[in-house]
Image (cartoon, rainbow, N blue to C red; front, side, top):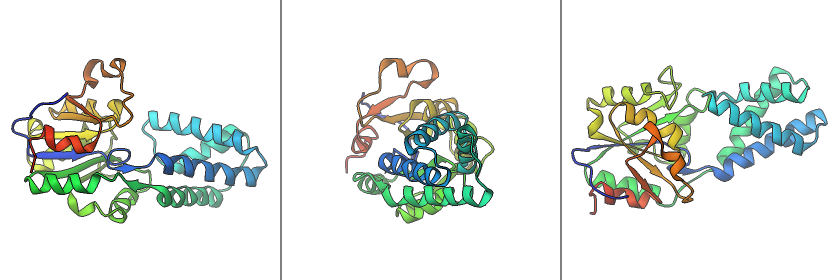
Length: 241
């Protein structure tokens, strides 16, 4: 699915699973937290891990990213009790574990540099991590913060998180452009496409696994382009230098 996009001067990105590989980090953090809860409560680690995964899925579908809320729900479903200090410890352990395993995709920095060299303005619209300031700290740690003219952390900088149009609309307003002048690049159709399309942006999905099926492309969630790697992005933007 290739072709040009006339009039686009802004490229906005999602972060996790788009620019940074967090697949291993996410699972490692789950397992560390499950092990810690198991050691504190005596509940089997595999049982805790199943509950952690289930709560995570439901919370993300509701747009709730505060890990304190997640872990309160986990212990409630397990029928055990932990104090506030221990819940806060779980949050710290979770994010320390996550950070130790997350890595930029190898193509991220070369593509960002190439787009900047072609004159594109770069920005980010990404959901909160549930801890104010944490997402920006991660961007700085990963060495990509200064590539972006704009960073909107939905849920920190806006009332609503993606896929709501609000964070996308705020990005356009701050940059002083119309939707047709921007393209949004993400990895999840359900989260990254509807809001971008609602404000008139082009939408690109990076499907590294090649698992995106026709059933994922219905209604207002149809991206304009599907690519298998960020390395394909400059081509569809006509940035071949």
